[in-house]
Length: 514
Ligand code: XMP
Image 1 (spheres, rainbow, N blue to C red):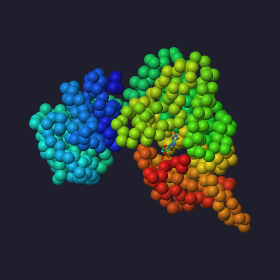
Image 2 (cartoon, rainbow, N blue to C red):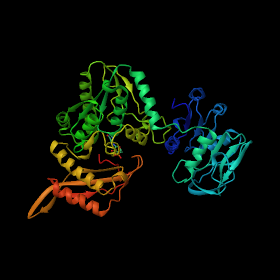
Image 3 (cartoon, protein in one colour):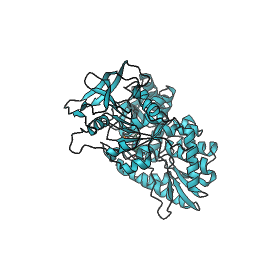
Image 4 (cartoon, rainbow, N blue to C red):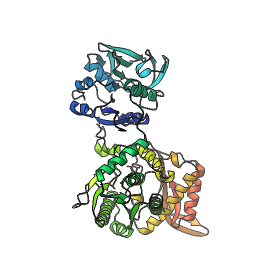
């Protein structure tokens, strides 16, 4: 079965919620992709979507350079749902009127629905709680359209007489619209007639067959960082080509306690993968000697990783392909308000490297979101412990040691960090955190142990909650958990006599200290 035979196209007008729309569609088990609003109609036609969703966006349809759509999309003969700005665009394009507003309607609202079909199928005619976030609003519908829901301040939803074009002023994709999921599902299943075929089981089948077709009898190399993405990518490629895959796992010396062994033995024993483990820690520490600037640390570690990987890969005969764990959010050409630099890219990205080897890239996760990668990992039989782990930065503990990174300071941080994680796991809060870790500060303070005065290091504990790492809040860890962490770190880690808790949110702070 072709898992892409039915697909929804999401045209992005720059809304902060565009990726959420895609998440909701995928959760309904329908494949979708996000493309910029100005994708040419010829592309849209060749893409042959089952339905189209126009996202919201920060513009006003009256702005001089307001993003617009080609009218041609309405001749593709597929249903269209416009959300917020998307609805205003449709209204204006078909001759309705949009009122410019200086004030935003932002927050919860209640709408009364006057349609029992279409996107409101099964939702009755009762008032619905929705989330609004808009400035302009539609005040007169185009000919051939009718109102299907109203709020106190605006026309909340509309549809055309053929039941093919729909618009909502509110945001069904956000959690604050409790029945939003149902509204999106109605569009997918009742209107666009999709079927829920996008499952990780079917994805594996199709990905394995694609990889086999591409690779033939060739050899593949894959860099393992210890992170979830590269491990899952390797497991998937391994399912497709078995022994023709060789993974290279570089231990850079700045991994967490026991991490190198854990990842290596899981992939080696449970998956029987061919893995070359390289202990390159001495090389990394040599490079890092005397370096205190965070960005320099990042660059040095990134470059050294590539160098080691390069040397090892060249030692494998007849390699033709390089597998990477690139994810969909890195691929989307979103119309981003924040600009491309707002996304932090993994420093383990080795694409385009290995000069002279001319390797072809295999990126089997490039259609997937992070939580789909986790689901895929489970489906491939990876342990919860491996795939449920917190994100860990490429430069590892090096950017959590403020000041110079030495093997000694790294050992202190590694022990403290292991205790932080252990206590948080024991408290049952691990899965509720985005990240939790220790940071070693370049500060010594006075303490007293027994009868002796000490003059030792300070460790800061950082625990944050977040949805995507772009914004984060410090976790309200119970005092008892903090107490246990502090007592154990000070008692068990030689060289630490003080523990502090970081209570900064992002923004204005960042998650990592460097
Ligand atoms: P910040 O510190 O910018 O971090 O709030 C946001 C997320 O990105 C991770 N991070 C990195 N990941 N290489 C990586 O692979 C890096 O250099 C890097 N810096 C930050 C961080 O752990 C958090 O999840």
